[in-house]
Image (cartoon, rainbow, N blue to C red; front, side, top):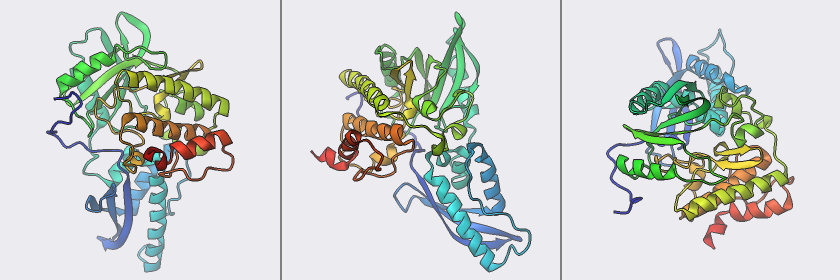
Length: 383
């Protein structure tokens, strides 16, 4: 059997990148309170849907959980008198629907645990930080040289947990340990994953962030890297000063606070990303996880992060875009497509929100506009 041949899975893994869409379809009075009936759908299939029942106070709780974003979210105001008036309920229903639509259009907000629990409480009730810590304690029982210092609230993935660690032989060297449960694209048995991960630890290239150590625990995998204090390219354009002590909700939700890179910077960074991708492809290592949060910029040098993600079966950041294009039939095509999305975000400071690029914003440099229309268009992959 080929090492990357898909095997029968014994466990159903949830794809957290599949978008949740919802519609408030009705309201009803229950025990002296108005409950809003919300139909929620995961992904494109109508049969993958369910209903949740929420009171206005539930919306207030969600709103409070998202205040850390710094965004103005238009939650309809509270009303003390006339709450059961039919016209008022209909008006509030429209306002609450608009509120949910705005949240779900923002990738960082829609990925937040509070939003997932609000719309899908059956699948998002676990304490992922506690699960990650317990799994790391089990995984590191035989690693006597590694000491866990504290949990780090970074990254957009709900289930991926990060910890500040150091080696007892090098206590002044700060490292970051990342543990994540296996994702829905897991293809290999744990022993095979451990073997391939060992090979990934040997990769050395100026544009690849090296893996210092890694392993497999029950149901997940972990890696250790240097802690890069300046954070990622996404931290850079977002103006984040303390990337490892600030949550993704606070850092990345407000696209308007970001500052674009110059064309010269974009071209230089793109060339270095291509060098890193070329090295991985030459080694036969699929990447598939290119986005701004996986790109480091250290004194002008680009380094790609999380080359182990595909090995652990994690769906990529741009999964929702990729599934719209059947022509993306190779990892090379996926990486080039994602590179176009990364370039767009470096220039315009917000994610590209269409499946193809037929027209560019008027302020887009002409030379890059030609690239986008070619490489982010589905027609390019038909050639």
